[in-house]
Image 1: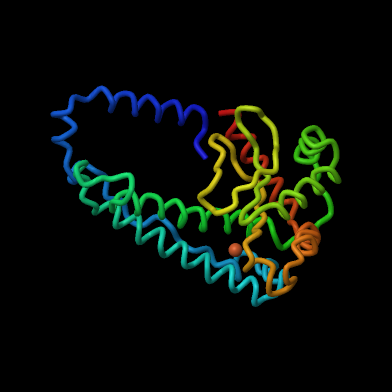
Image 2: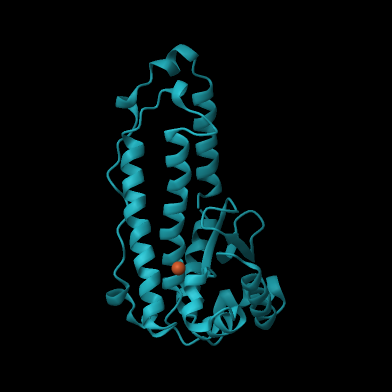
Length: 240
Ligand SMILES: [Fe+2]
């Protein structure tokens, strides 16, 4: 997620672009648009964090990994196709056009990559409770760890896809957000430090439709050291 400073810088760039005359804008052609190389590389969690494969069942985690690698491949494919896209504004259309389809689906692919990485990064632990500044923030923002866990459980049961514990740079608070699909309901200028996958592939093989039991066991396998590391990184970003 962009920092406030970066957001303001981006906004300033946008305002500058808006000041360009139509003749200058029409002179922009594909040669002036960056043509980036594919950006996404699937992490090898079997090597990086084999404990992730201890819960839920190995076949369920393999299903996540298969989807994750697919999102990486599609993010790279779309990234390259967008770089090669004909940017003639006359061909753009808000109902259907190549640029609309590719840019919308790019958010789905990148969301599938990033959300799964947060989910895998914070799994593979022994549950328990957080410590240090993260514990203090949860206490301050939710009242207690138990209240946070109850809110996460209710939010997860109510979700159709993703749930995030995220830090809001504006309010300087932690909150459990519902994202549903991976490109729905993002909160700008907030950063997730924990992700809970509530898509059916995440729990149905092991828990059937019992979402509550899946979340209870998710809480028992959180790697709180990893969540704390995410939180400390976010706090450093907030101080920039
Ligand atoms: Fe998943």
